[in-house]
Length: 260
Image (tube, rainbow, N blue to C red):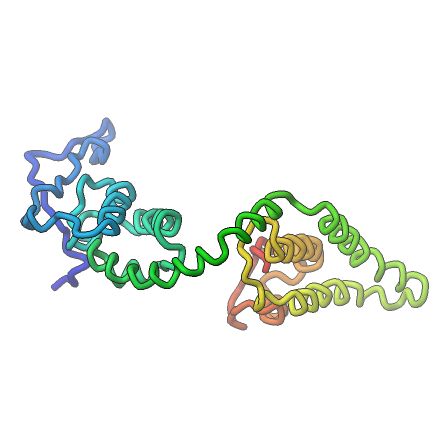
């Protein structure tokens, strides 16, 4: 017995499968399923509200279905996970940016999703009205990168790398083995100090962007040392110290990590 999500939504009877020159099934020549011939009543496919009409257009665009049924889950209409991500992106762009993937999966039909989104729109409208003028002004400001902030960041990166070398070379050359520890701990300290907990600005070139920009380049500088401890428990301990959720028994052999 198969669970419901593993049972095909529609079956197509063919006299024979189309084959390619290698004798394998040519998927490109398979006829596409016609979901319009489903057993659902067409009279119930009428949108009751403007929100349902918007969602119907989005589902049609994301799942490549002409006039999707408003009371049928997108999975039963042939929708895929990639189509769900595209639908979620369009919903956030055109309707409400507070919709998450969990809300879409828990309300897979157009009518269910419209009923779930409607309370979010009521809550979102007063906020959008209150911050319209300030939002336009801040957006214009944040559309250009800050030369001052980036210059200070580059200067700090250079000092972070060269200053420990100069200090150790001048005062105590025997401490050169500790140079790697200084560089690696500096990233941990910066990731803790530049905490994203109070960051709520998602505009381009915002504080959140420059935090990622600085820590990402700081991480790239430290890959010179990290490549010597790849795949060891020491690397796992360091990733956990940086805030990553990594098991101590995991074996990680890459330094290409989206930091933070």
